[in-house]
Amino acid sequence: MTITTPSRPTTGSDFAALSRRITGEGLMQRRPAYYIARLSAVTIMFFGGWTAFFLIGSSWWQMITAAFLAITFTQVGLVAHDLAHRQVFRTKRPSAVAGQLAGNLGIGMSYGWWMDKHTRHHNNPNHDDLDPDVAPEVLIWATESAVGRRGLKGFVTRHQAALFFPLLTLLAADLKISSVKALRSGTVKHRRLETALLVLHAVGYLAALLVVLSPLQAIAFLLVHQALFGIYLGMTFAPNHKGMPHPTGDEDYLRKQVLTSRNVRGSWLTDAALGGLNYQIEHHLFPGMPTPNLRKAQPIVRAYCAEIGVAYEETSLIASYRQALQHLHQVGAPARAEHTARRAVRA
Image (cartoon, rainbow, N blue to C red; front, top):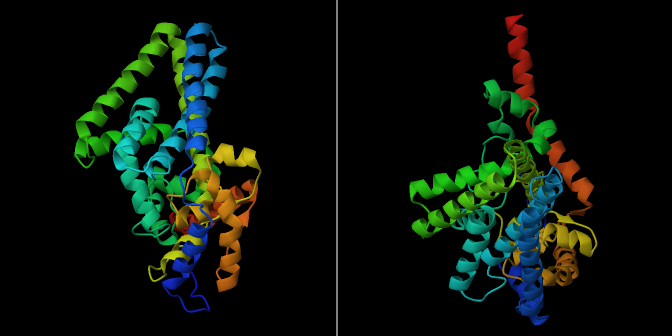
């Protein structure tokens, strides 16, 4: 699916005019009180969860702790996201230090690797060749990539809509594997520091499980914690672009960001659960905008898009997942047809 050419001529001034409105409302200004409160809450959740883990000791009740820490790890990841966009601190160094502590040491993911990957995504969202988030890997997001896959990859492609949520249970493991690969390849800045922090995370995490829990409980805790972490983290990102148009590369900045993104309606609870990523259109247009300002920017952006004739996609959370799954199913259609044809020939 590609973006259709809008009826109104695309000009670079469209985003400039919107930017002046947003800046005039003071929505790009820092929100230190908000981030002090948010970082404090997430820090309390993190250390409170691990304190509860040690106090409860060897017990199957620890599966509840695993679920709580899965939520906490995702919230830490969302904080790392805001740090990467310099929404919290003005300068690069404190953002990087805090991001490495949150990402590498806190949840076991290379902050440098993820930041590079996420920057490329923001530069070219949903672009088949330039956005790493839609690159053909386990899941296929572009129809032409679905043809010719055999074996396990072919099976996954044919059934990827049904397998989407089960596969999210492996996302946390994939983040760790990708982090290690990036560090080994030398593509991450501060390679030694990030490696040391990842090792500290792994040693501390596994030591805590093995010292406090029985072997069977430790295995169960690890599986439940990492699986739920992956599901929750994946569910915060899945509604944003999946199933939305794929750009041709000729669009101006505003249209490239707006037409490939989807907003999710909801209350303050949705804002908290998704870390503000439910305002994906506003976030992509103004990635440095503090999270609490995104809700205030939304009516301005929506009205401006209507004014210049640019489609503005907004839906419910459930509908956003439905659209993403429908897109996955449609993309897998050629693979299913190819598989059926091969079986017919063999028969």
